Image (cartoon, rainbow, N blue to C red; front, side, top):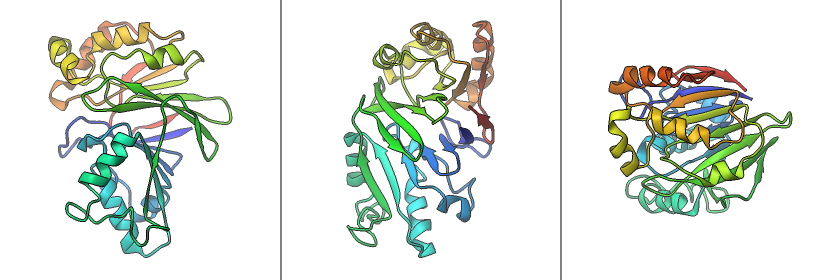
Length: 254
């Protein structure tokens, strides 16, 4: 399982891309950043997008991906998987022929560039050779996490934005080889994190304590750039092995 970090920031700046991870060149987990990193040939390889929730920093480049595909005039369709709430929000607020062309109907309703596919938390589905299960997590809007398992039994959990949650940790009992999880704010902003559905290093430590098995590798994403140094210091004080903050351009091998 090879993962390219296209973006791992909570805000967009010249040196910070919004959240997006590319798995094996064709599965995108969240879509905050695409075109700023991937050329057209690499964009056309994308066949599936897994969205955690509807906030703009996780979906921003999906409309542009659709537009790039339409311009190429290649017969190409991208399946976008998420909860009904997220897909409804995309249809109502983005692909509505007002904010952006409705690529769920272009070039036709039978053969659209974007296919919105609803998923049900706890019910597995398959993409290529991956078995994927979603779990609800605690955020300001409806949000899900993803558990990906490849044919070799390697398992990755991706949690985009989420405050303290319980369902996923009660449900996942097998060993996890990689965990991508957020730590948006330093510890002094614990109240704000809880109110908005995010984690601090201390809250992250509490989440890890809920797991039956400590993941082999823990990757931190979604840091606010202005607090990155402080978050790094506080993570180090946790004395947790195999934990690091991701940066744009990182390549992970799970």
